[in-house]
Length: 107
Image (cartoon, rainbow, N blue to C red; front, side, top):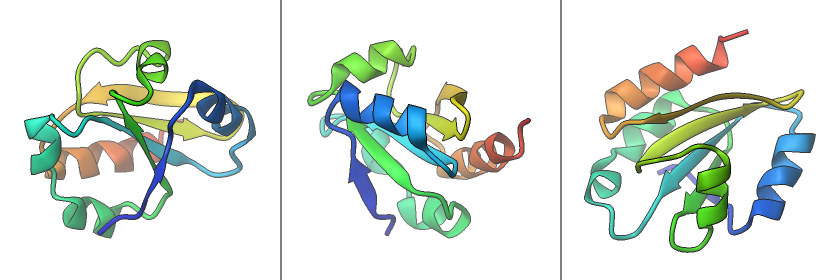
């Protein structure tokens, strides 16, 4: 299973956005979200070797709006130098893996 780092506030997101030295994945979710619970993090974790931050919509809805997230589950890759890929909304684990791989190779 993938270890997820909580992202409980906009301040923490901005710190991450401004200072990350490596790409990171931000996963937007909520405990009540059925499609979120169906994601297979074993599949995603085997293909995704970058840190994963979990932004719970019930704890930190400001960051969702700030990033343009309109539906969950959604994903965003934060790259060094304040570059973002996403957000993208999807709930198919295999497609999430494909998107992450594409996002990591986007210039």
